Amino acid sequence: MKFLVVGSGAREHAIAKALHESTSRPDVYAFMSNNNPGMRKICVDAVVGNTRDAKAVVEFAKKNSVEIAVIGPDAVLEAGISDALWDAGVPTVGPKKAAARLEWDKTFARNLMKRHNIEGCPKFGAFKDAEAAGKLIDELGGQVAVKPSGLTAGKGVKVVGFQLADAREAKEYCREVLSTNMGGLGEVVIEEKLIGQELTLQTFVDGKTVRGMPCVQDHKLAFEGDKGLMTGGMGSYSTGELLPFIKRDEYDKCIAIVEQVVAALSAEGIDYKGIIYGQFMLTKQGPKVVEFNARFGDPEAMNVLALLETDFAEVCRHIVAGTLADKKVVFSEQATVVKYLVPEGYPQNPAKGEKIEINEKSIARLGAEVYYASVDEKEGILYSGSSRSIAILGMADSLEQAERTCEHACSFVKGKLYHRRDIGTKALVGARVEHMRKVRGG
Ligand code: GLY
Image (cartoon, rainbow, N blue to C red):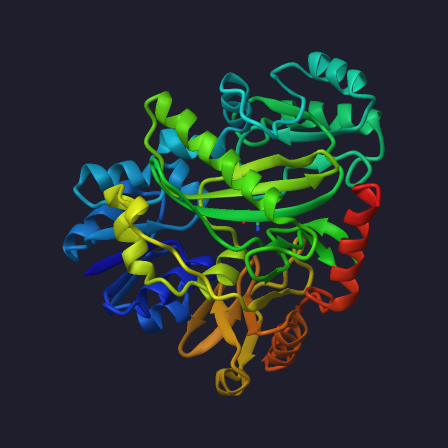
């Protein structure tokens, strides 16, 4: 078969790799926004262009007789590229614009949960007016999260006690979101602050059936010890289907919530085919929804696709055909650790255009994997872009070993880069387990 991957970050590199390694050995094509050398190496043809340009993506797909497309980035889904591909006869893993609204319009996602009485929805309100938003902030005792309704590349959410000192700063931020039209939808969502541990649960969805993947925990803050600014995600780990602080019945509850969301969309005439990424907060009262994303996570895609034992091309075929109920999806129970090497100064002033050297052979000898992200290759030399550069994955029977392998492999990447050494370590994971024990009142 012939597959097209749209996008060119490490997430899309992982998607392309999983397709390339499928037992049916499909031909993989890529439509990329930057020249990802990892994708170029495994794809039959890979071009650079505007991934939000429907005409250009469809033309490339048709020229290469692509049979299934897989879309990585949220901004591409928001641009309706899935709609254009389906209209052109190319079944696509990645929801159409109306379904991807679950991610690109937080007001829509919360109202959907409310309309259908879906569990795990925190108290919230959506506002076009800062005065009215301020009233809800006061009603919630100032303990809130402030979220621009539209897309902000994962950097728009601010929470009191973290990025905001108090209710006054929360109100000020509301005014900023609305006056600058942050997120592009002219709306801000205020939610009660959730206390607990966050986890990512990604699912395959064919419009009816939901198949869960192993839980992953991402690390959004730039520096060790969870300090610094919000980033796209500095790295993530997994420990089999469950994380050390989540119980089986809580995992099942998260899956049930996603199933209710898919049923609610379907009841409103919206067919969701692709990935639903649930960002959950595990609280004393059980899992609550932080947000939904309409795609694989980045870096979380790398954790789960590396563990997928079922043929990924087959899974994609079942998603677009709406026959996922007929397909068992199996993951290895190993542990994974992903660490991102990012340019010095990231996320504020990334050192762009700096040379990067990677000793891929030494990394492969360790059994680790390299995924290319925001980099460019010119005349065989690799340069940093303005976002995360390289992701390294370690995988092993124990988390300790996966972390050690990942960290060792990071030492074979040279350049003006930094990464978080603490991700997946016993100390950090142990602190999170202890925090959850306290939250549960234990
Ligand atoms: N890792 C966060 C995200 O993909 O949105």
